[in-house]
Length: 330
Length: 89
Image 1: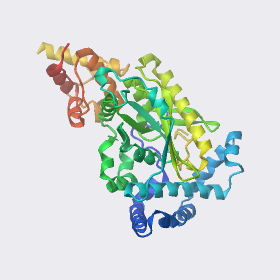
Image 2: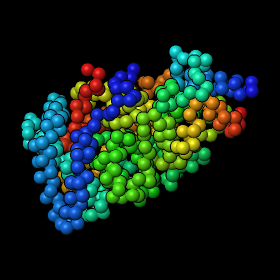
Image 3: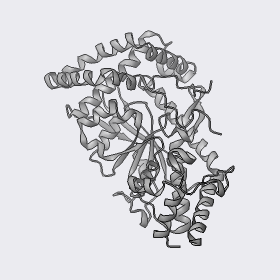
């Protein structure tokens, strides 16, 4: 049932991941100095020039943005979300939203200005199964869970919001990204590195580490929109009116472990506050081998459905700047 | 060492069964070959699947120590040594 790239192929990389190697670290250091001088509000003046620079120079990001906006507005709900036919201004706004997200991320990790976060849907955590005695569980007395997130809104803000919370959140990251922009952010705040689980091609340990963390009652956050663990294949699910490939890996993993699965997004509201929101995807329990394909497909479809509503709510905060619907097979 | 080779064959059977390697026979899996990187090309979820099967069958516990696991999962031979030393059934 699975399709898509071979285990060795690299996941599609967002433009910033490539950029990061071309001196983004230098640019980020510059913004950091500016933040030190002008504070958060003052330094925010760089967001427009930075967004403009990328908008002018990064043709592939612009094209990906245009394609995405086109697809978004091909459905009635999407048209309603944007309110009009997309043009260059929307592409600019899209890229600007991304620059804004990076800026906010920088502020938070550098400890400049406080993070205004609102948690919604945390009631779902109350519905997580109670921890079994051998599981240990967390302070809520609940079992751990796999939290599947996406490049919609700022995943990093969820990490920031979860720090100091009672339930530890581990973040699964992939080799290719770790060396670039994430590496820069983690160097800013060494505490962040503590809870990382690295996935490297050919490594045996990541899934076992994830299982161990969940068994301790922790949450493990992982991207579901196509980054890493793709050797388990890609599965198509309807997304903005056309089937798109999603990573089967996180869902296969959850079905194998038998842990509950949640979806979570962190979108920036008009008011500048970040909203962490979560939804249940699967209640947990080990899925028999023969039933796994079907259950994984169901989970992915549910995930895509939630992702679609997030994108409708915040159309400019979709941060996958590549042809998302192309699975590399054509 | 009959016990040892029996155990190795059983582990090969478990590998084939738990990872649904329908086209592979136990005889085709070389006891000392690398299971992951090159050998069978198994990935992280496969390792988990295999860990669960071994835990169920032999009552061993596989933790999350990356270095230790790299060692345990290196080959059928290393898996057999681990099971031998830690089995409770």
